Length: 617
Ligand code: AGP
Image (cartoon, rainbow, N blue to C red):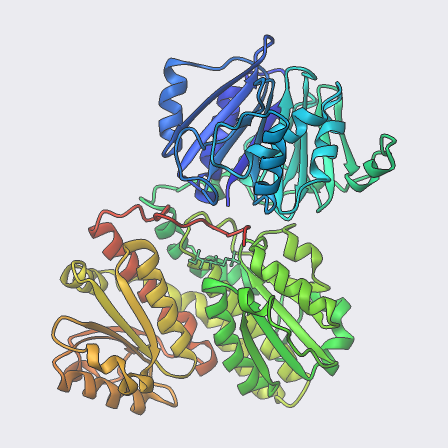
């Protein structure tokens, strides 16, 4: 997934585009580039590496012009080099474009264009777009872009400009996010970007483009058009688009004195869990209510089966949700890897609810899985963080997690907010079925205690530091948990893998005896999640099995569990309702992974080879 930002207005574009790129860097950071119309033609600067590399180039070779596009890349086709960096140009160099997505039929198009005499400079799939537009260009850029895109299979968020039809930027979207930023200060300045972070410093007025839409940005304003309408051959009628007002403010996307966004986001969790609950808990009725689910009310009463689909950390949240919903609401739940579900021939009987969980709301596999389930008659609900994102707009109803912008690539606060929302959805469904008002009120009370309990977990820095200092050079870790803490073990292992590049595996504790126990020796740190819940005694015997083989045990357990003597390191968390315990037990694992990554001098916020949300397959 890449980040695109574009600007047309009266000010010099370069500094505005550079600032926009910095705010989008978490989307992809293996190379970056910029192009402006300087009155004489198109000028391009690009460089492999972080945006700071591009900044250095611009320091000695600045760009001047008030119309420009820029891009930060997460390579899919063509290795991350300066040559393969965006923007890409056509043979003449008059057309420049930046693209987020994958052109699946790029090979066929490339061959066709080469037969027509086009010279290719890069190994990217994107470059075919520049030559297709060049081939179709007859003086009007948006017409040429539309003609080019009718030949394309694949996904794109796109920004294009040309010195042959200057004073204009054309953007288009199909399967990758793109929005317009409309200046609030009457200057008529316009932005286009992959997400609000890039425009928030200039405006809160945004227009979310939908798949199959194109927009033309000029100094006189913008027009949004349906791509398909062009196939009639006549210039299409402009379409009305709603202007949304972004609630987030700039400081939410700043590091606020923390050394990393991930650390800031870990410490934001007491507040983000509070925000996830705000206005949704009904104390006296012992239940929860969601404005975004009102239109689904009928379906929620008749739902007989739930499928939860997601990727990565969101998939781990789905697994915890399965335990919650089956245990308390007594509804059968299946958890599906979105990337598998979308290509499987799933059976979707009547009264099936599909829940798509996604922080970004743009993850391609989750979006496709949700669309597939809808196509087969399921009611689709979203649990999403990014307001206005595609999954949020395409589901039948949903719940925003209100975690605020999550910049660190390794998801933390979004995970605990997803679990909080899943717990409240479980409460609402359970109270509509068989949970008593007393039990409902107890769960509401336990939910309201969570922010304070998370604060006390965050105070455990010293003991977690000690553990990190002892094990940061190890090359393998094992994470074990039972029940709803098995997904927490998976999440702890994922956090460590993502940011410290240490090989780590999460397992159901009892599964250890069926293989992984062979890995146990004095060099294998084993993190055991053992809160004092209904399976505590079982986990304790697993811990004893590990100690018998000389393993090193780091236990996450409830205060006063009495496990000290059986383990090498003990990190305690407050006890809460069993269904909510994963919200507390995961936090020491986030901090441990963070501290180990810092000790290993890894780039915590932008780990290698990763991107914040994967909008390509
Ligand atoms: C988690 O730390 C990762 N960034 C990744 O696994 C992520 O959870 C996954 O890509 C899903 O993203 P989403 O929640 O935005 O859909």
